[in-house]
Image 1 (cartoon, rainbow, N blue to C red):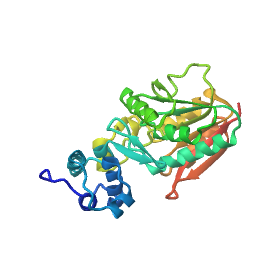
Image 2 (cartoon, rainbow, N blue to C red; image 1 turned 120 degrees about the vertical axis):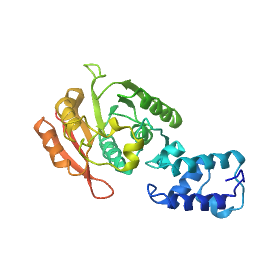
Image 3 (cartoon, helix red, strand yellow; image 1 turned 180 degrees about the vertical axis):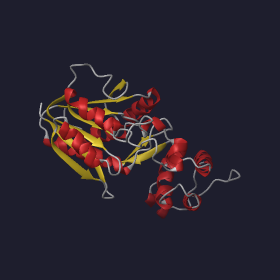
Length: 290
């Protein structure tokens, strides 16, 4: 951009035009607004009412860097270093999956259960990743006595989780390890939620996913079905649930029926399937009778 400082209106027009030309960027105008909020703290009304106000030199340089990374094919979330989820903004990098609207359904199911369950709560998110879901849930439960725990197999991901918990002022205890492995044998939770890897070895993903997002966060081990981790949790999560506690699992397309059967076959009751915003069966939840 040859070092020229842009006005707010020019910056928005440039971003929208550049993002529209990139095939891996959906909703370019919406994402241009989000990018300007992340880069310069601007809201839509700031751009609309004062389009001639200039960005600072540092903001212009950051915009240049974001566009350069996006042009290379990098997802906009990673180009910015942050992304939105459930109405809030979270740090992200290439050690964690980009939070997606699909997973807001998992949060909604979890929150509904918490609101209906009286007393203190102990909540575990397995494979916490960026922490977006756990932190968003904690923010919705402010004022309740709720202990939040998250674990992940990736220490790098846990660093991102920790940064997001601090950013939003949420106390979140973090454990390193795979699935239920890091839990003490006497641990009990009112709610366990998980968005496990559910893409099988033979299943395709978008180019921007396989090029940039951490494969072990979305793909199951080679030779295993997409419901591999769902089966593990259906078989073992009850050990760590209090009577009447809930297990809530995000599932891939066409996996809900199988996961429903796994939960019923392992002693869970009140199994329910919840659709996401696109009408896809996205979350399977069930109650542990104890």
